[in-house]
Amino acid sequence: MINKNVEFLRSLMNERGIDAYIIPTSDFHESEYVGDYFRARKFISGFTGSAGIVVITKDIAGLWTDGRYFIQAANEIKGSCFKLFPMGEEGVPTVKEFLADNVKENGCIGFDGRVMNTKSVVDIKEALEGKNINIKHQEDLVDLIWNDRPEISKKPAFLLPVKYSGKEAIDKLKDLRKVMEAKNADIHILTSLDDIAWLFNIRGNDIECNPVVLSYAIITKEDATLYVDKAVLNDEIVKYLASAKVTIKDYNDIYEDVKNISSDATVLLDTNKVNYTLTETLPKGITIVDEMNPTTFAKAIKNSVEIENLRKSHIKDGVAFTKFMYWLKTNIGKIKITEISASDYLENCRRAQDGFIELSFPTIAGYKANAAMMHYSATEETAAELKEEGLFLVDSGGQYFEGTTDITRTMALGPISDEEKLHFTTVTRSMLNLANAKFLYGCRGMNLDILARGPLWELGIDYKCGTGHGVGFLLNVHEAPNGFRWKVVPERNDSCILEEGMVTTDEPGVYIEGSHGIRIENELVCRKAEKNEYGQFMDFETITYAPIDLDAIDPTLMSKREIKMLNDYHAMVYEKLSPYMTEEENIWLKKYTRSI
Image (cartoon, rainbow, N blue to C red; front, side, top):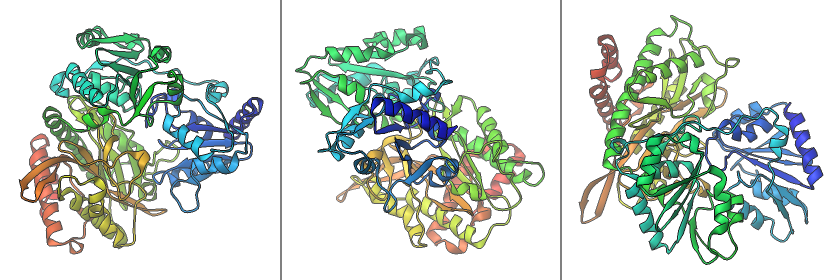
C-alpha cells in the first residue's frame, strides 16, 4: 500500500507540475509529536518514529531521520520504494542539498505550507537560489489520497491552578509585554502549543502524551487573543482568560486577522515555529523581529512552586518505577513477561499514583538487541518475551499535576556478558559524572557534555544523539532551549546558558546493533552554588529517584569518587522512596540501594 500511495501522490504532483513534494513530521504549530490527523509522513512512508522528513520526486522517495531512528527506519521501510537518508552521516545530503541536486531550473517544489515552518522554507529557497524555483504551498496533497484520515482533535482543555503553575497568566502576560517593549514589538504572534499552554495556564489532550491545546495566540501591548475551538473550553477557563483580558476567537480566524495587521507594525515571531502559510499571509511592509519566543526561555526556568511540585512528582514516579522494577526482578522466569506486558504493568503502577494524568511519551521497552534502537516501539507482532538473561531497557515517564517526568533504567534480567557489564558500568559513570558537575555560570550544555561522553569516547564508543534535553512542566517532555550536546545543532535549539531552575535530562548510552542497548537517565535541576571572587558557581540537584541496577555494575571499573557518587545517590533513593513501599519491597530496595 505504501508504494501505491506514493504512486497516487506522484500522479497529483504531475497534474500540478510539482517536481518535489515535502512531507515533514509536523502539525500547524511545528510540534515535535503530532496528533493522528497530522501523521501524514507516517501514512505515506510507513515509518513510525517521531522525527523525519519525506521528499518525493518523480524518481526517488526519500526518508530523512536522525540517529535515534536509523535502525528502526531501515527496518520499517524495508521492501518499500523508500530510500533512507541517515541525517548527519558522512556523504548523506541534507534535504536542502538533495533538492538543489534533484530539482532542475524553473522547477517546482510543493508542500502544505501550514506544516512547514517559515525558516525551513527560507533555507530551501536560499539553497536553490538562481534556479528560479516555483513554490506551491496552498494544497495538502496527502489529504487528497488519505481516505480514512482521522479528524483534527478537539479534546477538552483544563485550567492549571496557580498552586501548580506558580504564576498567574496575567502576570506572565505582563512579563511578556516587557520583553516585547524592549524589542520595540507592537505585536507578538505565538503558534507553538507548549508556549501557549504555559502562557495562559491551560492544558489539554490534543496530542497524545503532550497536554496541549490546538491553538494560536496574538499578543499586543494592551490585549491578547487566543485562537482555539471554543467548544474545548469550559466556563472556568473562559472566566479565567477574561480576567487576564484575553479574547477568544475561532481556531482558523488567525489567518484572516493577520491580514489586518498595520503595514507599519513591528511583529515579533519565531520563524522556526510559525508556519510558512501564516507568515506569507502577513501584509507586505511590516517589520519582523525574528527571534525565539520569549515564553520559550521563561517557561524553561521553573519557579520555586514548580520545582517543589516537580520533586513531589518524581517521588511518585520513582515509587511507581521502583515497584515495577521489584515486580520485574522477582517475577522474571516465573511468569510470562513480554516487552508490552512489562510496559503495561509499569503504566498501571503510574496510574495508581495520585495526580497521574497520562504518560509523558509512549514507553520505550527494548529487550536485548531491540534496545539498540534508541526509540524502539514494540508491537503485538514483534514484542520479545523476556528471559532470565540479558539486558532490558525501559525509557518512560508520566504527566502529573505536579509536573512531567522522564526516566530510563536498564536492568539485568540474568547473566550478562563482560562487554555488557563494561558498557553498563561506563554509562553509569558517565551519568554520575555529569550529575555531579560544578561549573561557573555562563556554561552551556555543550561545555559539560564531555563529562558524560568522555568515558564512552575513551572506549571508542559514541551515541548518535544529545546527552540530555529540557523537560516541560506538565508539558512537552522535550523542551528548548537547554540541553547537553557535544556540538551545536541549530535546529535543536538546546544550547543556551544553563540558568537556575532549568530542568535537563542526563542520559548517556551505548547502542550496539544486533546485541544490546543501555541508557540510564535522571533529571537534573540547575541551581546556584557558592559565589566568590571567581564568580557564581552552579551545580545540579538530581530529582529522579530509582535504583540503578547493581547486578550489572562492575565496581572494579569505577574510581573511589564514582563509587561514592553511586552510593550517595542510592542512599537518597532509599530515603525518598522507602516510606511508600511495602515491607517486602523495602527489603528488596535495601539490597538494590546498598553501598558497594
